Image 1 (cartoon, rainbow, N blue to C red):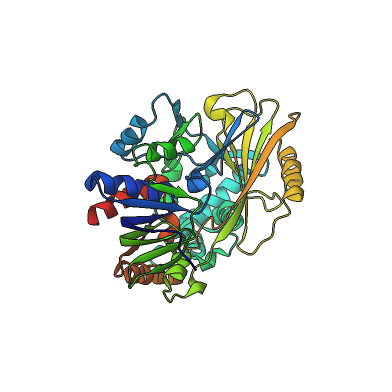
Image 2 (image 1 turned 120 degrees about the vertical axis):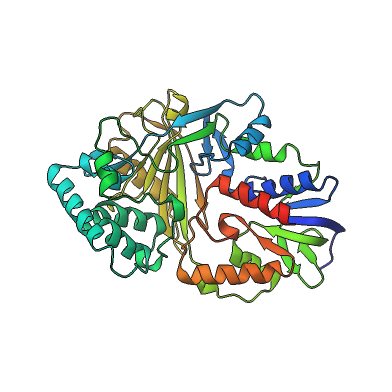
Length: 427
């Protein structure tokens, strides 16, 4: 193939999402004047944090809300978003269970169930705790039964997570959700029964800009040198021996490569041997729906464990800014090989939203859809081992893999920034 031009960079970044852009910023802050090239195969930066505006509605590719634990990171981003209306919101999220809305997380709010079901959950939770001396669980599914009992697991945790991940929970590692899984014990349940008690999990508050998650991407782009980010340029091969990245446009000699692309895809372009079967994931079809009138107030998102409903989660953008027209995102999980009949599924979504009373008299006036593939990584014993081996092998060749898909993990957007900064220090 005749390369159109040749170039050289200290660091080549693959992927202009949050991880890649955070790495570029952090590296340049530590090495002013260095040559950093960010390659993005899509037509614009942002990855899954891209934002769509249609008929006055502002939608992300999916619901991307920011939960900052590091005040310095939040301050750094906000300083690069002058004039942006960024709301800090106390989250209101619920589980729609058998026609009633239970506060999230389910396992800490079982007292809101009908008395008979509450007692069943409480008794099962008690005896699960009593059996704590048994051998450690070997899967996510087994962990749920062992730690939370049959009733809590089968009423919410199994049906919801199997709709989301589109796989059996026994395939997933015990810690597949890491710190994001809200564990509970008898004391937590009792404490949460007090009037006014609140426990919304790790993301009890979140921030969101009026112009969508893309505002944070623009903040990450703001200080990068002109021409540092090249969109519409796909990496087709990496020669790790010669330290050359080959793209659809050129070849670039590099000192280091940092990639946030899915790890198995990175392995392929590097010609690195890997166990492809270790890397499985789901895909998610996201519908963004705009209506002519307001719907429910006081809710930001809701989980739907009922297998009769096609979606697993619905979110209300309009309730963040108290807009007067209902603006929803609706998420459908599916296996990686699923084919979507988008029009039929949109009709099904509308029917299910009406059945659940989310849509009543409102009329749909705008819509958008996107498929996230991969969406959620299946974190298994095999994927953990192969991820560690492959990342170590690639780093020895000057290729570093980061981010949710580069590290094949479950993490927050802020975690991506923290990881990128730590790697910039190392490089």
